[in-house]
Image 1 (cartoon, helix red, strand yellow):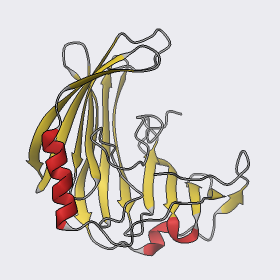
Image 2 (cartoon, helix red, strand yellow):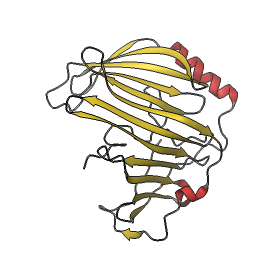
Image 3 (tube, one colour):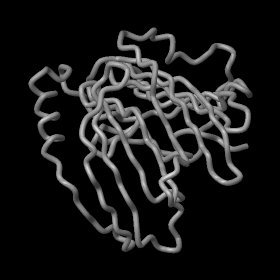
Length: 238
């Protein structure tokens, strides 16, 4: 079974940066629900799957992880700040795993227009850069500027990887990431092959801003609790 989701496309739920994750958290921004569509077009690997992602006003997040072969939802990942826990639902088995989590405090209020504008000004000031990772890989980053899509203003960055070590698992070496700075939402991550052909595209669309139904974070009553692997209380950092 091939699972398409956070691990598979290296798109963890992390705070927004110029690098552009898909769904951000740990910031008190407006709640939303959206559709995430992953399209892969590699030799011997072709599929398109869609799922639902959401963020509540308290920073809690919800993400469905589909099976790449069938499109069925294999796992649902919930970061439930209201109850200090992370939840993994397994719909096919009607099972769930719960871990206690120590979440960092959120700012008391959402960002105001001045703070958002400050971030937009910072993004406008970004210049092309080149860096080297600990393993010797070279990463060139080029700001792509702003675009408007589906009524949202997005900011893009192109990242090109070279001199990768033989142990690298990175398939595509050229990536473009797009974010919606005003909403703290990553909207697209696209990976390109050697001739700039699109190999992988993860896109967030049908974004609806508004309060969520808190039942989205509930554990279904007919699910059976399973023990988590490992021990300890995770601490989620900014």
